[in-house]
Amino acid sequence: MLDQRLTYLTLGVNDLPKMKEFYETKFGWIPMAAEESIVFFRLNGFILSLYPHDALAADAQVNGNAPAYKGFTLAYNLGSEQEVNDLMEKLAAAGVKVVKPAEKVFWGGYSGYIADVENNLWEIAYNPFLALDAQGNVAAEQS
Image 1 (cartoon, rainbow, N blue to C red):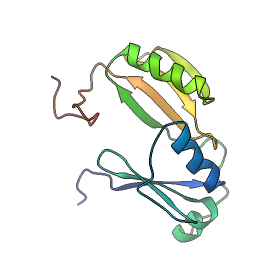
Image 2: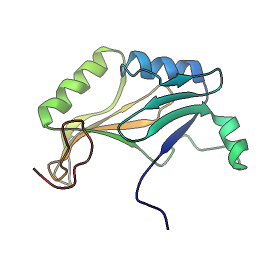
Image 3: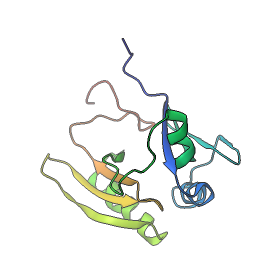
Image 4: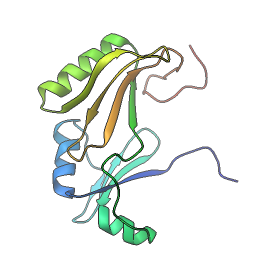
């Protein structure tokens, strides 16, 4: 069986240079490696890679005609509602599209949504039921 872990999350993108620029300039992330056809960002315990949409579909041998709503979100969790508000304000000021302003949500947390330049949704959230360590990794238990 599989260990409960993630090594890579690869986004199939339509405009690789534009997506690379978004993550570098809007999020402030530094690629660990970048080539003409793929970009890698080392995150906390796994790698986010950006790869051309059609090439990714061909590699997986699937139909690349995906609907606009992708059916998944990426999440970036913080330690408080104020940290969510602060980050959402910074991202909006940097020209990032705010899809849903941060607000209290039904499950007891606080979150909003932004979108990258290809409309991949990022939830910016505070989850009072989730413990994070000093590096922002999910901790084993609440502190």
